[in-house]
Image 1 (spheres, helix red, strand yellow):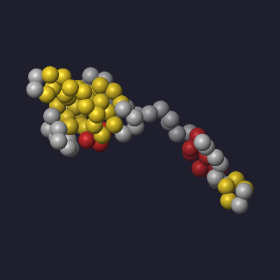
Image 2 (cartoon, one colour; image 1 turned 180 degrees about the horizontal axis):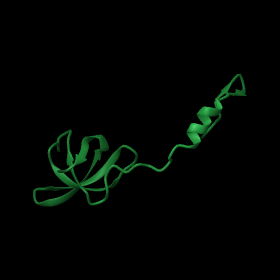
Image 3 (cartoon, helix red, strand yellow; image 1 turned 30 degrees about the vertical axis):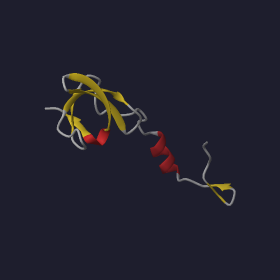
Image 4 (tube, helix red, strand yellow; image 1 turned 180 degrees about the vertical axis):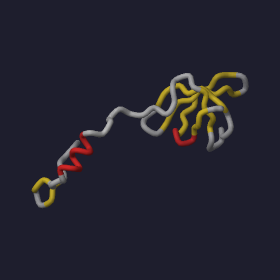
Length: 86
C-alpha cells in the first residue's frame, strides 16, 4: 500500500529540485554479478570457497553454486558476502 506523506491531512510539499532529481534518476537496477561468473564467498561458514553465481534471490541475496564433497550444491548468500573471483 502506498500513500502520500501528509501533515494534518494536507499532502507534504516537496521542492521542485528534489522531484526533478528523483525523476531523472536511472531506475534500472545495477547487477553486481553476471550469471555464470565465478565468485568467492567472503563471510560465514563458507568463507573462502569459490562458486558460480546463478541468480539474484531478492534484493540483498544471491544463489551461488558451490562444489561440496565433489557434488554441486546451490546456496543462498548475502550479496555483501560475495566478491568476484580473481
